[in-house]
Structure formats: C-alpha cells, structure tokens
Length: 529
Image 1 (cartoon, rainbow, N blue to C red):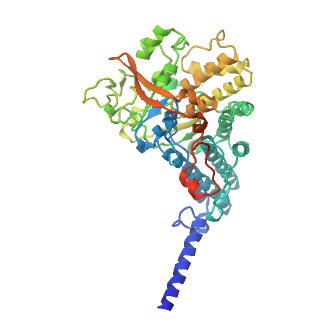
Image 2: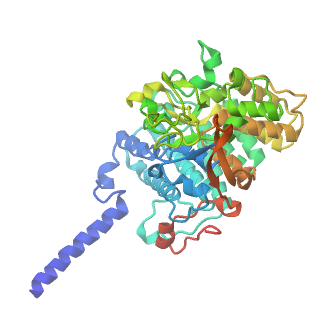
Image 3: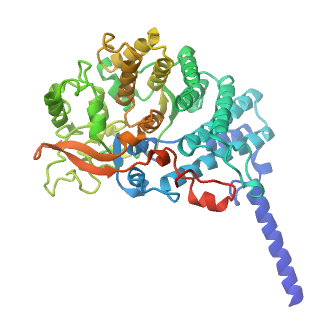
C-alpha cells in the first residue's frame, strides 16, 4: 500500500506539473502547444484575428450603444443584457456585472495581443506582413487599454502575457496609462497603412490610430493633441462624409442601413455584427424587443429646420414640439433617422405606445415594449427582421473626427479659425440643415454651445454621450432627477420613466470589480466604492 500510494503521488504530481505548464503556455489548458501552433502565415493570421474578436459591437458583446443608457439619451431595461439601471440609480457596486464584464473582456483581449507579439516571430511568413501584423496587435492592445482607462481610471499597463507567478499587478496612474496609449498609437499610426482594400478593410489603420488619440486626448482636455490628431485624419484624404448618390437627402439615414454600409466615413468598425439590433431596438409588433429606449432629452435636443432650438421659439412653441416632436415635419431630419416617434409607421406597423389595449404589444410599460414612448431607429434595418443579415457597426466615423477637431479649436480659443464653421457646415449640409448662423454663433461660448448640441444630434446612441457628459463636467447635472419620455396625449404631460441618482465624485469612474480586488492584494479600489 505504501508503494502504491507513492506511485499515485508521483503520477498526480506529474499531471499537476503538466497542467501548470499548459496553463502558463496556453490561453486554454486543452489547446495545442506553442511549438505546434506558431508555424505558418495562416497561424499568425488566425491568432491576430482572435485579438480582433474583442472589438466591441453596437448591440451585443460590450454593446457600445448601451452606453447611451448611462447618459441622458436613453434608458435600458432587461437585466439579462446588463444591469445598466443600477448605475443610473446610484446602486451599482464592485459586483456590478457591466463593469466586471468589460474589465474581464478587455484584459483577455490584451493577453491575446501580448501572446501574439511574443510568438509571431516563430511563424514562417512574409516579413512585411509580419511587420504590419505586429503593429495591428499593438494598436489593438492600446485600444483595449484605452477602453479600460476611460471607464476605470488608472489600470495596470500590461505588455506581456501575465502568468500566475507575476499576476499581482499594481495600477498605473491615469497619466502613465494615457502616455502609454498615446505613445503606442502614435508609433502604430506611423507604421500602419492609411487604407486597406477588400477583406482587410476591417483592420485597424493609421486613421483609426489617430482617431483614437483624438478621442482620448479630448476626454483628458489635451486639446492641442486632440486637434493635431484629428487634423492628421483629415489630411490623410481617405475619409469623407457619406452621401447617397441617388438621393442625397437620405444620406444620414442611409448611413446606418445596408444602403450605406460600404462607405468612406467609417474609420474603425466591426464587420458582420451579431444581428441583435432587432431584439434590442425594434417594436414588439414587428417581432422585435425594445431594450433601449430614447428619452425626451435627446429628442428635444434636435433643432428645427430653420436652425432654432425648440426653446428659442418660446414656451408655447416648445410645448407643441414636445407633444408632437416632428410637428409639421419641421425638425432636423436626423431626428427621424435616429428615433421612431408615437404615431409613426415602421415596417408597415403603426406605433401606438399610448394605446392601453391588451392586444397592443407596444403599449407603454408592457414587457419588452418601449419604456419611454420612443424607439431607437439607428442600425435598425427591416432586412434584419429575419435575422439572416448583419450590419457592420461603426466604432468611429469621420463625422466624429470633424467634431473633435472643431471642438478642440474652440477650446483652444481658435474659434475664429475658418475650419470651425467649414466642418460644422459640412456635417449640417449632409443632414440638409441650414449653415451655421455666424451672426449668432461667433463667440467661444456660443460655438461651444452649438458644437455640443451638434455632437448629440449627429452621434446620438453611438455611445459617445457617456464620455461627453463626464468630460464636460455635467454628469451630476444631467444624471440626477426625473427622466421623461414622450408626452401622453391623455394627460398632455410627458411620462415619468425613472428617477436617477448620481454622485459625480464617485460615478465619474466605475468600480474595480470585486473579484479583481479579492484576487489581487495589490489592486486598489476607486474612491467612494
């Protein structure tokens, strides 16, 4: 028995050591060894594609459009898609599933990028392709660091595939992480192609790297960096605002449909998304589910076709436009391209959120129906009703870069620079809106007001508003108090959707996930969590 026990112990020890060795050398204990994997160009391509897997989608995975529900643009229901409601009510904590999921996903993607960079030299392949692949991996790794930084603040900078022996990592400062990301993306931008062709169009490019720098620098109020990076994108000469050749007036709406899917406006995008749009935005009456619903705040932001806000028209006119947002078809066309309103027809179905009949699947408050009386229309193409097709999702598009450039100029007190009005007018003209009224918008304060309104009209539900309200210092202002939806014709009052509670000092950052705190004694929690 003693001999048998010894033999069993030796065998078990060998298995344990073998298992540990596998854990240190593989992304998964049952995967093949590095020596077996890293051989050919195809192996390198497949490994790099696994790094691209982490690119977020609009309505699945890390679902960027759901960030609208953490701002004043939308509300989210159905906790199975993430408990966004807890954040806006101030009830989120270190066990919050949205933050924990993004933390885990991004660090998993960072590890894949690191493993690629550590092993790709083993592959026999064209040197120029290998050179490009390395910069793609570094750019993606920087992007995943950037996502984490913008949500959590300072995080560990990870440039090697971490093993259990060295997994206790401290958080780097925000400044250190910012500098790392900008340095990496700058180097990648200088070595990646300005444009790809055919199947490679989805890959991260020089333009995407400069665009990410512009977005990050704007958040941290590094306006010169944001301006210069955006200008580099413009000067590449490969991007332009999409316009439908057959009917330019439909250009903005078509941009988010299959009609305009292949365009030169998209800078960084996810190809062939999950097809969750119909089960995220569409009315129940057409076989959809409404998880994300626009608020009155985003609807009321759109100007009239004369370039006036509804508030500038006086209280009586403002009340009319609140009751009937598209009164006399006199609103910025981007409203109807982005939002479906009560009484509209979509896919041969009339939307009646205030019809309380039990047979009306889309009555306000019904399960899987709108929570506000409005519906998101962006990226909702009737062709997706069958679930057989999937639209590409644009993570960054050229219109945002033009707005970044303009905002940076304004904040640098260069608001008289001709490019400010030039690029605002290009965006407004594509939407068939009148040019900037320079007799009104001719000071830094007034142009700041205009560009902020223009950002929401142009970029609604694309996720950027969550970053904007934080960097502008209005998080506590717009995320506290009652949220309203459409005006109920029976009461002539907007429906009350939910009461929100925001502690700006705490909620500016997300909590570090509790399981990370428990697993890593070097990890520190964000303030007030």
